[in-house]
Amino acid sequence: MSTASAYTVTLTGVQGTLVRVEVDASPGIPGLTLVGLPDSAVREARDRVRAAITNTGMAWKACRVTASLSPASVRKRGSGLDLALACACLAAFDALPVGSTQKWVMIAELGLDGAVRPVHGVLPMVLAAVRAGRPRLVVAEASGGEAALVPGAEVAIASSLGEVLGVLRGDDEPRWAVAAIPSTAPRQGPDLSDVSGQATPRLAVEVAAAGGHHLLLHGSPGAGKSLLAERLPGVLPPLTTEQVLEVTAVHSVAGSLDPQRPMVVEPPFQAPHHTASAAALVGGGVGVARPGAVSLAHRGVLFLDEAPEFSRVVLDTLRQPMERGAVELARGDATVTYPARFQLVLAANPCPCGRGGGRGLDCVCTPDQKRRYSARLSGPLLDRLDLQVPVLPLTRAELVEGGSGESSATVRGRVMQARDRACRRFAGQPWSTNAEVPGSALRSVHAATRDGTAVALDEAARGRLTGRGVDRVLRVAWTLADLGGVDRPGAAEVAAAVQLRGGGLPWAA
Image (cartoon, rainbow, N blue to C red; front, side):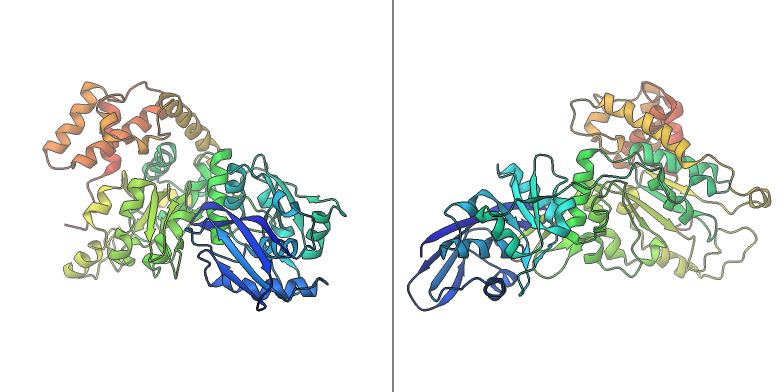
C-alpha cells in the first residue's frame, strides 16, 4: 500500500478549477477520510466509491485511507469527483499500474453498482482541464458529445468503472467521444412574416436585433406584442463558435441541455412567468447560486410578458445585469459570476384591464389602479430601455390582409450586414455591438455629426432625455446608420432614434 493521485475538476459557477486527488493508504483503523473543503455531495462519495469498487469485483483494503483534495483552499462541489477518487484509491491499493491515473482527468459520478454517470457542467470542466494543460479526459458516455466540443480535448467515454480500469491497465483501448455536430438546417420557429401590419414595431425589432438594444412594446391586448417578441431570436445573427461555447457552458451548469443535442447553436429565448422570483430571474439557490433566466438568455432574448404584473423588486434586479452583461451572486461560502449579455424585451398593457389603449373600448380602471400598475416599471429600469414603441390595435384592412410583411430571413440578412459594419468599426475595441459602446466613446471616437448631436442635446435640454438617455439615443442612431449604410449618424438618424425611444409610458402620467 502506498500513495497515488488522480485529477478531476470542480466548478464555481461556470469557472472550473483543476483538482488533484491525493490518496494515502496506510495501516490503521479502516476508514476513508476526506480533507480539502469537500461539500456534502463530495463527502457522500465515500460510500458511493466503496460500494462501486466492491461491486466491480475489486477489493477494498482494510486500512486507513486519507484523500486530500488540492488546492485545499477551494471548496469542492458535486459528485463529479467520484471517478477520480475511486481510481486514486485503487492505485493506492496497488490494483492499478503506478502513474496510470495521473495521465487522465476524470469527471463522472459513480453508481453503487459501478456505473459511470454524467454530471452537470461537463463543458466548462473540460475547458478548465484543457486550459490547465491536461487535455485527456474520461467522462460518462452520455457526456461525451458535450465534452468533445472543446477544441484540443481528447475525450474518452465509459459506461462503468470496470471499463475505466481496463483502459488504465492498458488491457482495453479507450472509446473516444465524437463532438456533437451543430445542425445546418434552416431555422425553424416563428417567422416575422406572420405579423400583420405594425410597421414601426417591426422596425424596432429589426433595430433591436442589429444593435443589441433592449426593447419595450406597449399597447392593448391582442395587438401583437408577444408575436413580435417571440420572433426577435429569429432575426438575430447565428452565434459564433466562441459564443456557442459560452452559452452551452451556462446551460450545461444549469442541467438544461438536451442529451440528444448537447450544444446551443441558436440565440436562446427565455420567457419566465410573471410569478417568477428574483432568484429564478437572476440566479440563486441553496449553497452555490445556480444560473437564472438572465444567464440562460445569455447571447439571446429574455422576454417578460405582462411586465407590470412582475414584482417591482424582481424587475429592478435586472438593472445591474443589463449594464454589466454579467450577474454576480454572493453567498456565504462563495461568490459566483455568470454571464448575462441578454436582450431584454418587455411587453406591457396600457392598464390592468387592458382597454386603456384600445380603439372604442371603455377602460374600467381607476386613476389609482393605473398609477400603481405603471409604477411597477420604475424610472431607472425604463431609462435603460433603448427602444420604447407603442403597438396599436390592427386596422380592419390589416386584419383582412393578414401576415404579408418581410420574412425573418430577409430581415436577418440586413441585421447581419449592419452588425458586420459595427464589427469593422469596433475592430480592436472591447465591444462588438452598438448597445455596448460606453458614453465616453460616443462623445469622442464614435461621435455622431454635429447636427445629430445637437438634436440629442436639445431633447435633453427640454427634459425629455436623461444623461443616460442621450447615450442610448446615440447608440440607436448608430444602429440606424448601420442599417442604412451611412458612415455616421446625422440629424435624421438621431431624430428617428428619439422617436423609437418614445416618451415613456403614456398611461404613467
